[in-house]
Length: 90
Image (cartoon, rainbow, N blue to C red; front, side):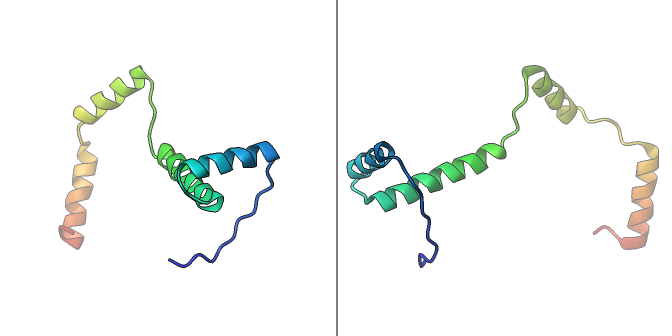
């Protein structure tokens, strides 16, 4: 994929030196290192938002509801039957 976007950042000399050192350890340019590290951090941040964290009691309550769902109310069964008659099984 062609690289068409540009990113600029202002750094302290100490921060830049740290990035230079880390990039050198990986055999990369500072630019390549910053892009790769930023991408990893972005993906990790997005992935962490997709995880549901629950306290122990909430986990147990969720599992119980999932394993033993509430019975389907008669009105909902009737509505499902009526829908199937109108639209079919799709």
